[in-house]
Length: 230
Image (cartoon, one colour):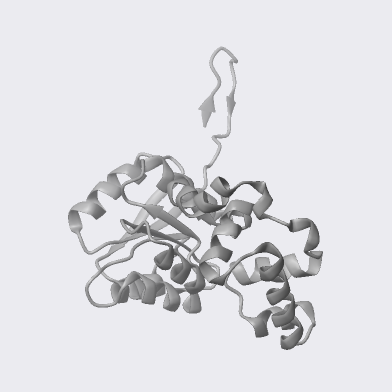
């Protein structure tokens, strides 16, 4: 029971639901540091640790989890492979990739694999806390430092680069789903269209926006805020 100061009566204590976190990193010192940081937060609880991807999958089979904080470069099974397998095992499980790689290629591959968040180890600790809470709430979270890096070419070129007004709503819808990692067949089934129609919408949107390849599409998606949406 909790007593309100000066009230003369007691009221039931509010129960705070804690997010259950699994830490995956091959360096024990790193895991210890992360655990100390997360355990200071009243809404977070580290319920397990793993030193590689294979061990993370085993932990996920037995532990009740909300979020996995996953290193990318580990001996044995990498964070990328482990992310793919964990998402197949638990599709609703939120995974936050924690890495030193400020590289668009890594980000793209991890987004395809199903990661919910991407945070740089060199960023302030608050970024990881934000990522854990956002992904547990069904959102995607990309480290702002990485977002600004990838979006820079579009920002510096000015608004004349975008011709969004010429793109149809359907084309943008398809392009957004592609940027979020969905395949053409999956999008076709979701929108009840043929695969060829999806490919045409994607091609037309890319042409109208002046985007060449997946890297530029990802940059546009980051700038548009598509990857921060639930």
